[in-house]
Length: 188
Image 1 (cartoon, one colour):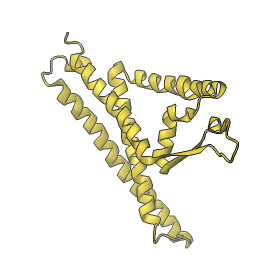
Image 2: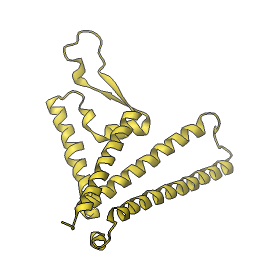
Image 3: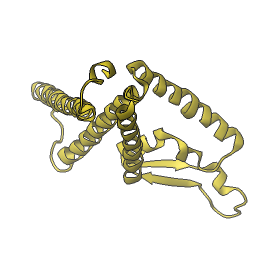
Image 4: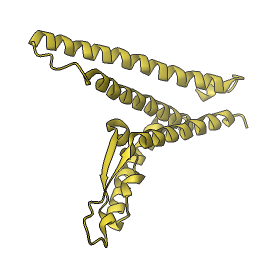
């Protein structure tokens, strides 16, 4: 892609169009796949005669879960796009995600546990993914009760708003870095 866009005068517009096309196609695919999925389960429920309770809070709750999943898919696609643009290869994006998972999510968890760092889960992206998808991440901090003589459970919560803010910030920074790097790439 970089070689094809060297001669193009409006390279950032083309890169933005590629990102927009990716996000639009994923949105359309998600809507169609979700409709087919729900349709099949509706047919199964009608055929078996046990559709279950679908009134009250069922549809709004299902819609909220679907929307959270869709936003996560779009954020992951934008982050992957940005990492692939920064690394000039799709393999770079896969390598970056793998390195993050092994070094940070697994390695840092071990270090946090050994050192006894307070609220070590706050440094993990998976905590904010959990908060976004479930609405609230309930966590426990064993170090919070050190030196406390009365009742102390050490529990705390991270809400979906903070989870979404962290995810949006991460994807926004990656995307801006990708567009900034691509703007200067191969032209200087």
